[in-house]
Image (cartoon, rainbow, N blue to C red; front, side, top):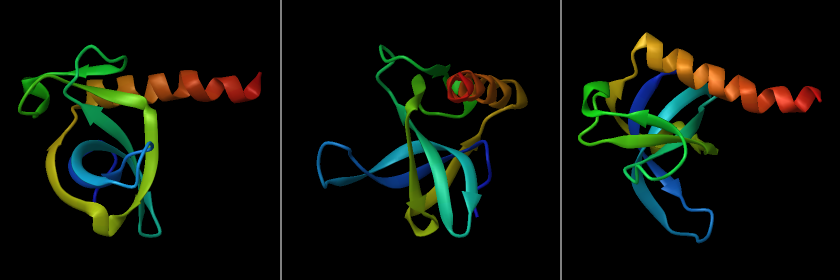
Amino acid sequence: MPEPGDVILAQVQFTDSSEIKTRPALVLFEELGNVVIAGITSNIEMKGIQLTEADGLMKKSVIKLNYIFTISSQMAQRKLSRLNEKKRKQVYEELVKHLDRLQA
């Protein structure tokens, strides 16, 4: 079962079509057979948290915290790496900034 902070390969459906592709994603949490993930892209021009080869990916990438969705645990294919504590904390802090707007 994937754990928070794992970078996995997952089958994801794109928001603008019904097409499903295999893409890297960051596991935020898992519950009752569902996995909440944030998409990862190799388009380093996009806004998000930067990842490098040192983070266990094949090339520089970006965690897109504006691209969060839920998949079935069956769509999580395999673990690629795990973010270090510093990078996990950065993801947490960015998510909290976004969620703090709910209190406004």
